[in-house]
Amino acid sequence: MEKMKIMLVDDEERFLLTVEKLLSKRGYDVVTATSGEEALEKLNSHNIHVVILDVKMPGMDGISTLREIKRKFPLVEVIMLTGHATVETAIDGLKSGAADYLMKPADIVVLMEKAQEAFEKRRRMEEKIRLAQARRFMKSPRDILKQEEEA
Image (cartoon, rainbow, N blue to C red; front, side, top):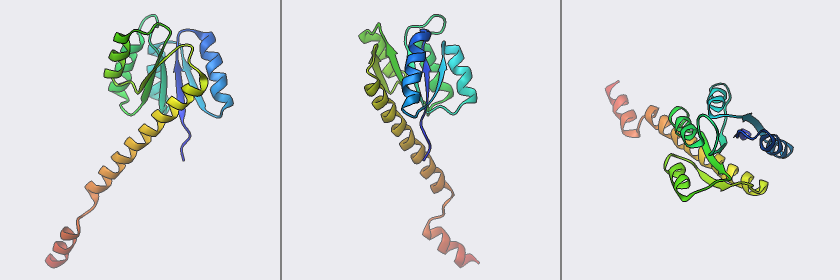
């Protein structure tokens, strides 16, 4: 079974280092980025399953980054994280494809639970895609019998 790979995206480096250390100690593969642009670059070269993304960042904010992630990497699950939550940004994030929304400081256990839920959601989606692809290539019993009759 594949191990979950998490990307943390936040402009607060101290927060990034602390959460990265806590998640790494619990056995997770963690990649960090300090901006939306850097996150998108790293997503091109790393197979990331779940992104934990800060909403408020200079330059490309979290909502813009979320939209770009979902456009380029639709199977990547994103959990929005903010210390400045408003109902509007939460709704906007969820409408844009975020799996969940957490307030800072988030309890590490809750953060891990949400990441695991998002990872499981992604795995279910990947399985549905695999099954749909397999069905496309499989012949029905009727097609097999018809092919035998023609031979």
